[in-house]
Image 1 (spheres, rainbow, N blue to C red):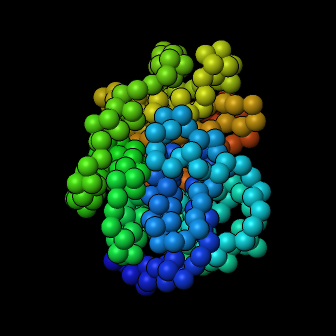
Image 2: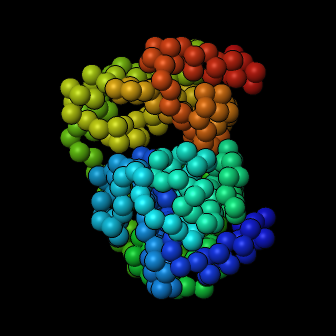
Length: 328
């Protein structure tokens, strides 16, 4: 966070002087946004602050082992006024969902994010796109506060880092990422058990959903693009939840020659699109063209258009970008 030293000093000053805190996750929270919020909430409470983690939800079942998750407040339009609101991995205020009237109920907004598409909506913005995870940024904040790490927040930070780096597999993993993970391991967290829960345990509907999606996978553009779609009827028939489809998009990239993977999921009101690439296409730019965002190799967006319309539009957009990059 070298480039953020000035903003970090401001954030630390607000944290030290504030008494009441709202820690917000993005909608449909994942391990990074939840782990970041929970870790910092433990630290703030040890500093004798009043802090709560808020989310529009829903909370994913596979993270129900996180320390403090039972105290997360799920819902919308919460009452009250907060000295400081810290938004975890929310590229826009809207990404947090309708938790409250942010401008009127929060005196100081701190935006902590590692997406380069993040907008500077906060009074204080800690945006570091070179960070592999939001949890790494929260780690630096905790260290700067000079509060010793305890096992509870170490578990939460480890979950944030491992989920957003794909078990240190993704190219966003840096030497600093590994150094931070090593320090978290020194807190005697049950890393093997955590990894098993996160990456080697899936409910039966998730396994069935994966099988259905893989059986319908198709390859386009001379095998350079993989596409998977999951209809609302499929979710209902298999009694699967949206969270059960979390990792399915990554399977498309396992095929030799595939440069871009698309997963389109349909629910009652909208279509969600997950995008992955091996660097040949900037998926954050693709997502941004449809109102979304993310990282270069992992991004997504939502749309009110039909599954078929979005499939056609996204496929054409990625084909165009591959042609621009000489991948004919």
